[in-house]
Length: 292
Length: 144
Image (cartoon, rainbow over all chains, first blue to last red; front, side, top):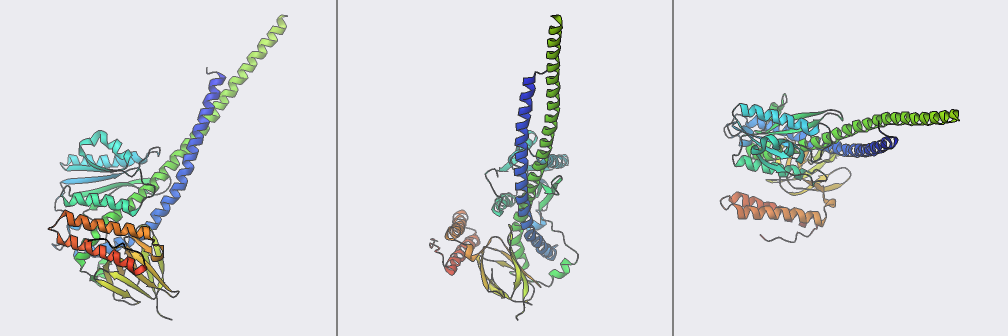
C-alpha cells in the first residue's frame, strides 16, 4: 500500500504530464489548421496540372516517342519506394502505418523477384525501416530543419528521384504517404509517380484535340513531366504534414483524457487512504481514552 | 464595356489571383503573347518574365519563373513561382538571379556535350536579368 506522500507525488507527476500533452494537442491543432490551409491552397494547382497532363498524355499515348517518364523504361525490375514519414514521434500510429504499408509492398515485390530500393523522407520512417531493409536504403531526405514546407522542398526530392531515374537506377517509383481524411482518420496511400499515370476524365481526350500547342506537344510534355513529379511529391508532402498534425492532435487528446482518468483514480485512492489514516488515529485516541 | 474572361494565376503553394480580366500578356517560351477573351485554345510553356494582367480596375504585373498557361474559355496560368511585381524586392530578386546563375555554371562546367543545356541556362539567366531591368531592380549584371 503506497503511502499518502507517494500518492500525492504520483498525482502531481500525472498532472504535469497532462499539462504537457494538453499543450502539445493545442500546438498540433494550430499547426493542423495551417497545414490544412497549405494543402487547400495547393489543390487548384495540382488539379489543373493533372487535367492538362491527362489530356496531353492521352494525345501522345501509344506513340513510340512518348517520353520515358510517361512510358516507363520498358521494365519493372527495380522499384524505388519513396517513404514519407514525420520527423517527430508522439503522433499515434502515423509513422507506423506508413511504414507498415511500405513494408508489405516491399515484401510483395521481393517475393516476386524484383529489386527494391528505399528512399526515406523524414527521420522516423528511416529508423523503423532500417531494422529490416538497411541494405536496400539508397538515400534519405532530412526535413527536420524545415519550418514551413515549400515547393522547393518537393523540387529537391523530385530532382533526387529524377536524377536516379535518368541514371537508370530504377524503373518504377512509388511514393508512400498518409492521405488526410479527417483529424481521426488518415489513410496510408501508395501512389506510383514514375512512370506517370494520369487518369483521363471522360471526354478529356476529345477536348484536347482542340488545343494548339506551343512548342509542340512532346516538348511541352518533356518540360512538364518532371514538374508533375515535383507537384505530386509536393501534394503528398502537404497531405502528410496535415495528417501528421491530425494524428498528433488525436493522440495527444487521448493522452490528455487518459491522464485525467488516472488523476481521478489516484485521487480516489488518495482520499480513501487518508480516510483510513484518520479512522486509525481516531480508534487509537478512543481506545487510549477508554483505557484510562 | 469590354469583354472579360475568367483568369486564374496559381502557383503550387497558393492561388494568387482569380478574377475577370480584359487581357493578359504572357511570357511564352516561344515569345510573348497577349490573350484576350475568345482566344483560340492553346497550351504553352512559360519562360521567366513579367506577366501583365489588365482588369477593369487597372493593370497588375506579376513575375513568373516558368510553368505553363492553358487558354480555353478561361485562362489559367500555372506558374512554378509567381509573385506580384510590387512584392518582389531586391533580396528575393537577387536570390532568383543567383539561382539562375548557379544553374548556368553547373550546366557549363558539367557537360560540354550538352550544349542545349548551357544555352537554356544562359537564356534563363538573361530572362532573369530582363525582369530586373523591367521592374527597376538592379540585376548586378552577372558575368557569363
